[in-house]
Length: 289
Image (cartoon, rainbow, N blue to C red; front, side, top):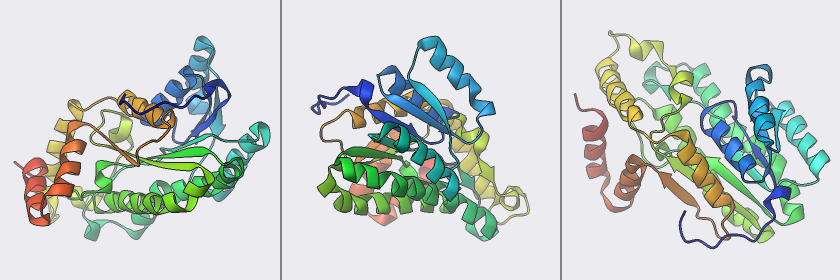
């Protein structure tokens, strides 16, 4: 943790909702917040597949409940978050984590795949934010943490659609800080680099770009080889969860937090280097044979 002053808050009465909690970053964030006294609602799409979370909560005597929440659905978001608000009369923390990766050259991705990626990664966050903001504005407090990515400030090859969802998220959150600041609401972007989680298990990959006949196949092959190698030595999802906890217990949280040496390197490069030099840096990092 950094030296930021911590809030003098009674966290056992603080209510937190985390989306995409069935595995990886979302799961570890839900568990860590519950272990630190937050009344935690772990949002998952499939309750049956996530029953093991209830077992952990019971074994550790955690204040953690499963919440059936599909961020792709207006009705699910409204009903699920509305239920929490009706029961608890407040929400102190929202962590927008639900999302997945999409690999492939833009030319070879279907519009259905592109729209689905935005539906979850970008519009899913918007749905949850719009549902939460009124109660946070009324209580004049709250923090919304958004799990972005290093791909939210620097473009990677064969990741154009995934990266664009994160760029869009970053722009929206940066702009929203002005809108909600007068009401005591904080906005945070957490920007991990490679994280050794279940991200690869949920990765959607273009069949076209994987085809050896694709004009982008060689680029795809080099990128994925370097990416998978980097994943093996990457920080675990618990590292992201710790940063989320740091942000939500800080009096003045940062707007952006980078996690991992790769994220820090590219963030520094984005601030200090020309576009041409960043392009060369990226090619050397992820397209080397």
